[in-house]
Every structure is written in structure tokens, then in C-alpha cells.
Length: 98
Image: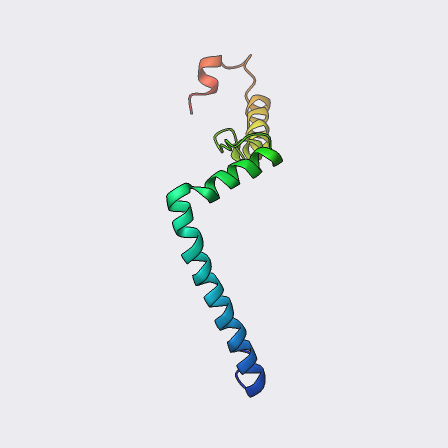
């Protein structure tokens, strides 16, 4: 949209965008049937991930980014509760009744 006021520049930008769009369409026409028939992109991606990481199974199951973020505030709250209400004054069963 920034090239609309300059006529020659707009024509060049429009031509470049058209070529880019046709490249995308031709890529889909070539790679989609290959992927459907042979799974070539899946196999090549698995091979590359094996080279880079050491295995083609990349699971997000072990990734828990909430726990390291929440652990310090929880510990601070627990220390505050134990500081304000020591277990010697109240029973351990009452310490976590709220």
C-alpha cells in the first residue's frame, strides 16, 4: 500500500507480489501430491530433526514452563504461612485446611 502513489514503483511491487504468489501456488502443486503419495516432507523433516536433535520424536510432554514460574511464589507463600503460623502452635492438619 505504500507504493500506490508512485506509479512505476507500484507496478514493480505489484509484479513482484504476483511472481511471489505464483511461486507459492506452483510449490503447492508440486509438493502437495508428493507429500500425499510418498510423505517426502515428513520423512525429510524427521531425518533433519534426527541430525540436529538426535531423534525424530519430539514431544512437548516433558516441557512444563509453568512450574518454574510458579514455584518461587508458592515457596514464598508457604514460608510466609509457616512464619506467621508455625506448626508448633497449630497442628499440621490445620495448616493446610484453607
